[in-house]
Image (cartoon, rainbow, N blue to C red; front, side, top):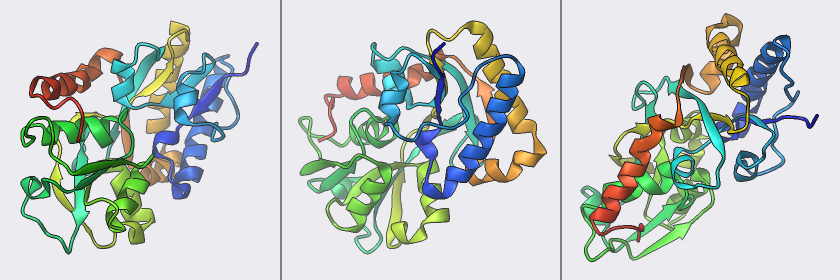
Amino acid sequence: MSTPVASLGMYDHPAQHAANDRLWSALAHRLVARGIAAPRQLDRARSVEAIWRDPRLLLAQACGYPLVTDPRLALRAVGIPVYDLPDCGIGTHLSYLIGRREDAPAGLAAYRARRAAINARTSNSGHNLFRAAIARLARDGRFFAGVVETGSHRASVAAVRDRIADIAAIDAVSYAALCRFEPAAVDGLRIVARTAASPALPFVTARSTPIETVAALRIALADMIADPTLAGARDALFLKDVLPAGVERFAVVRTLEDDAIAAGYPVLK
């Protein structure tokens, strides 16, 4: 039997590695007790995109945008996290549109013909929510003078700080991690605006995972949330709860894209 794989790498700042490892150890212990094979360690050697496409995937956290827009992504949603942050609701999050404090332009319209940074065009928080926020301001399908793709939220923050870009969309959980664990990274930046709310990043498994295993994963996640000995690890990840959820919960992510396309703004540019 092939060894299952697991990754919790969507929110895995170096300062959060120990917390993610602690939670995974607790989850794996509970799964093994139910007769389900589970890897001892999280996979940090590969990109999350590669892990999502691994048919052996037992549990990972994924972006909701490719989940509903990429037909090649054979994933099943297991649960949706609830984060203990001011701008995160019950199973929702949003993105902050950040700029340099010294620039202090008055609202989003002032960023017309300036430069934007995105982590990836396949990202809900870095591109899809950003596009939805800008669509009403675009003219003839364009708003910015240029868009740079950075590869990560942290790199987008650095691009704004270092004047490679003027504005970027950073999801609220990633931004909170930088503020807590790496405050120098956001020094001199400010929140210009907030995007619409969107479903938080789901916990997923391979679509081929037996339904009995999916049920066991949901039970293990609920046990992990209820375990008082894991409170410190949950706090390091801002994690308050995990609710059962199916892929239908993420239909609004696709709706945001469809609305931007209907407004004549299919691509952030």
